[in-house]
Image (tube, rainbow, N blue to C red):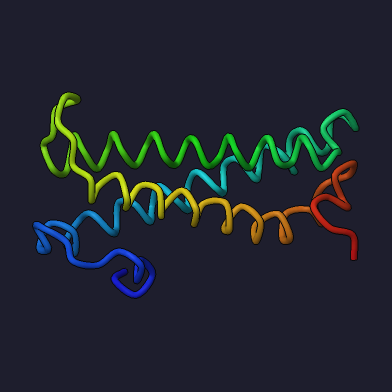
Length: 128
């Protein structure tokens, strides 16, 4: 997992990060991106043409980004590092932002896979 989060270096509590921090963040990243992609393409992409625009796709990608951000900051901060809401741990915030950026990229890649299973959103985000 250290190679996946290569932008994030010079950590305090290195043992905690390598044992549970990276793995938990990666699970949050993949699970949330899969769920939001499935909702957009398999559920909403088969029901109505209303969501078959680039703006709605971008909205769902931002929903995915915000979900990953909120889940990562709360689960990593409260469960793994035992922080309370009043404490500020800048490295955790930087890690959360990096994880959120990865969620946008993963959502884009999953969109290229899931769009084949959609009826109305077949050409979102790009047409091949």
